[in-house]
Image 1: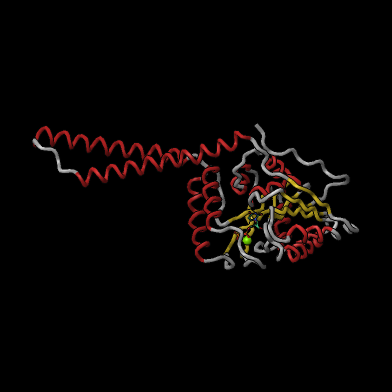
Image 2: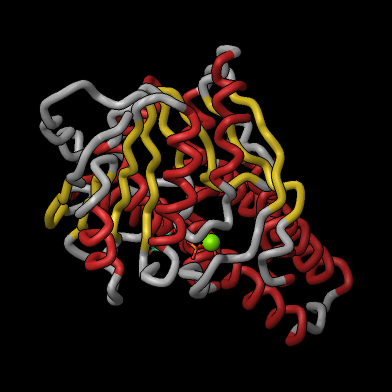
Length: 328
Ligand code: UDP
Ligand code: MG
């Protein structure tokens, strides 16, 4: 049941040594500057490289801008998705097209400084398969978002079955074999940083301070952030299901104790305890727990349903490969 798309036929010629994958959604105001800064960093490395930029169904002029940039940059591979598939799937599409032995994943808004690349490459030279960029601070994000993320990463680490590093987004350098493994994973609800942790091998951090966006505004409103957070937990552990069992067990124990109390007072005291308030609380409490547990089951069930349908993870409209003199 493999719902991942087959890898696209590679174009003729040697694959580049380094790929940079950049998903973008409505990044018209940023993309030219990102292209300039990332290209400068890649050129300085002195090896062959490609920039795989995925346009995730933008409603603004991002695609037109990419086509324009591809007009005189042979390193650029611009992939246009048929609609907005969301950040994690856009990233997945980019990984499908990336051919390098090393793949840098970063956001297109320059919150992740591309200048970290040389340090990441050095780490990888030491035999590390995943060099993830861990945020020392994130002055560029709103205080409420920082708080939400800080609490969430700690919660996730506590429940996840594999070690998921704190304060780390998708900004990372991965080896070709990790890329191949990610591409081969057919799961739909993709929480890429959790999937990378699952792969194993040597994974080590480099530290950085997260800038503010270069331009434009966040494409992760609170709603999407919460959806990603739920995906993160559910794709990393089955513990919420065991949690349901524990809560159910506790409720049954309390229920039995109360039943014994009620029966004994009826038998020996001769009257039943007064009970409208306690009855109401019990009914509401038990009803709440049941709905909560059903909700948890539903989250897993919905994902199974999506997975069983086996639709392709994303749909590609067109791919434009850059042209111009290639100097590396
Ligand atoms: N993004 C995307 N599809 C989406 C939402 C976001 O490809 O549906 C891209 C976006 O263009 C950016 C990256 O994902 O390159 C991270 O998004 P953003 O910077 O808005 O998130 P934040 O840094 O605010 O958490
Ligand atoms: Mg951002």
